[in-house]
Length: 243
Ligand code: FE
Image (cartoon, rainbow, N blue to C red; front, side, top):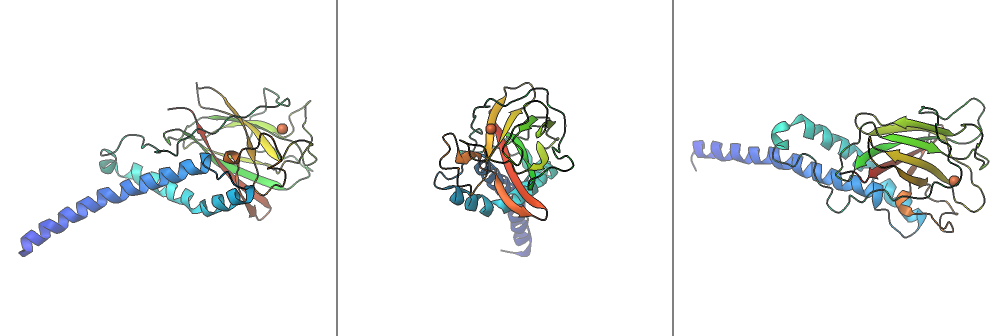
């Protein structure tokens, strides 16, 4: 192979590499994304927690992949507009709202008020469609008990709604809910993409002794939980049944 042929070969090799690497990154990130929302192991709560912790770095991969995807339109033209999540695109399962929902909650991302007892909790995540598309403007309406396991059924303590940002991301500042008889620790939530059906469900905490004895506990609804400087940090990805 003379030097001109070698140069031509090298260019072609590099061109293929620049297309294949972003494609692999996008597909890997999308698969990891679906698992976080819908494929928790059905073994034990602790097993689920360990699995989620081990997946923590994949959220960084996802961000990187999405950024590189949008930054390289040439590569994107070779892909579908919204890459499929393969078999990891199961919607977040619905659960009962229970008897303690109050409509018309305040618009706010922090449920904290001065003097509240309890361990601080920062819950964050993303709202996606079943095709891994961020659902900008999705409504999230949260409600849960205070530290003593009591709902405020007359006011709006520990109740509030917000809308996901342009990347479908949300953040909620609150406390770790208390526990009341008959249930394990949980947060209620209603999620709704604009002009789409409402998903009513609940989020659970890993490592809770009450999880296995709770009749409606679902490991697919476990948050990822970690210690933080002033409390706990939890993450959850909602996958709404929106194409
Ligand atoms: Fe409840």
